[in-house]
Image (cartoon, rainbow, N blue to C red; front, side):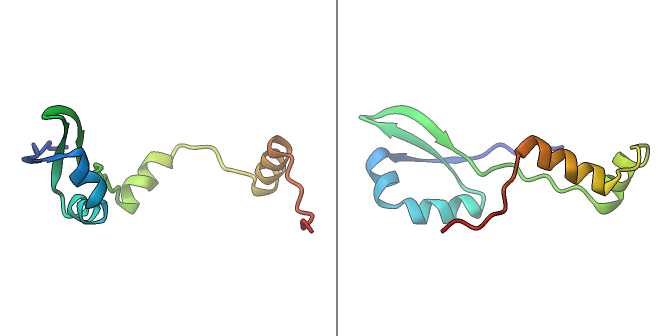
Length: 89
């Protein structure tokens, strides 16, 4: 995977608080931010790295996995979670 360095825009705590929706949209567009408080850097906001795997890649990863018995799997999950599907009043 190639790492692309971010050029971060510096914003203060107040701007983060007052413009959070705009900042979230900017993150979606790939922008990054350095957050300051009292002129001192306190954190960074960067877009989450999203890594997509092709269907072929997933199939390759599981090609040597043992077969799964769906009923046994469901029973084991139910046993661990002790699920009660009774509707609540």
